[in-house]
Image 1: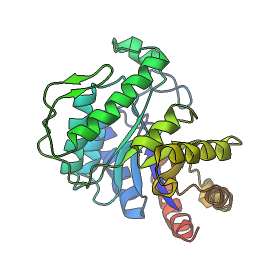
Image 2: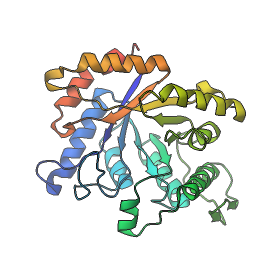
Image 3: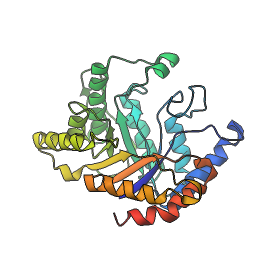
Image 4: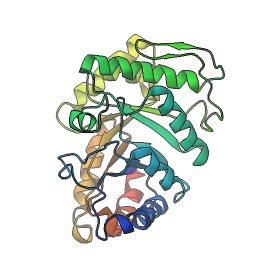
Amino acid sequence: MRVGVQIRDFTWSGGPARLGPRLGRVAAEADAAGFSHIAVADHLFQVSSVGPPEQEMLEAYTTLGFLAAHTSRAKLMTLVTAVSHRHPGLLAKTVSTLDVLSGGRALLGIGAGWNAEENHGLGLPFPPVAERFEWLEDTLRLCLSMWSRGDGPFDGTHVHAARTLNSPQPLSRPHPPIMVGGMGEHKTLRMVAKYAQACNLFPGPDLPRRLEALREHCAREGRDYDTIEKSAYYVLDPGPKGRDVPRILDELGALAELGIETVIGGVPRVEDLEPLALLGEHVLPAVKEI
């Protein structure tokens, strides 16, 4: 099993003036410890599960570019990009740029999005859910078109591009891996089977049913289910002095038995570095055997 860390809380002591240097140290520590992915949330306001909307929140892709310069090994991604935050052509170009500048370490995490408050607050479009899924499919198709050898026109349901020129192309081959996030059995998991190399799900009693739904979509799409990386969101809290490491290992083992291959999640108090060090010492070596 692989373990990645998501940095989702930037309300750290010292305020914005110290945020850059501290974030660089967090990323370097996570990279050196052996985390497979370093992810950030693609939010414009902080989300209620972390804190009030007024708390500090960095723009995702600017942050990933900064993290690329402080790391050398881990995959870099959003968990996950909201399709309504960026035009699909610009998103494909942005991820291509991140992949080139990071040495081929970009991964496109994307979903239909859900947080209307931040879109309305900053004047971004937030279409009804059915239309957001149409935009999501257009985005996936346009990204794959821009990451191909050609540069012809593209016509989707909402997106129309006269010339899909994308130079330089990403270093990742055949293209940066795509992770579609979400639990929807009818639309989201169908798009995973049709377009993606990975999915991101949430642990819970519904997880086996969602994995079975994905398997069924793969059969309909003629896709090998085993070629899709199954990931789940999991909060990585080792507790004081690593007290909760045994619980983490038990829970990760249970997820692995269901077929989960990767977990990515927040680490409470990540800015203190000690939780990352505890996870690197006690969890990451053990999960290689799971």
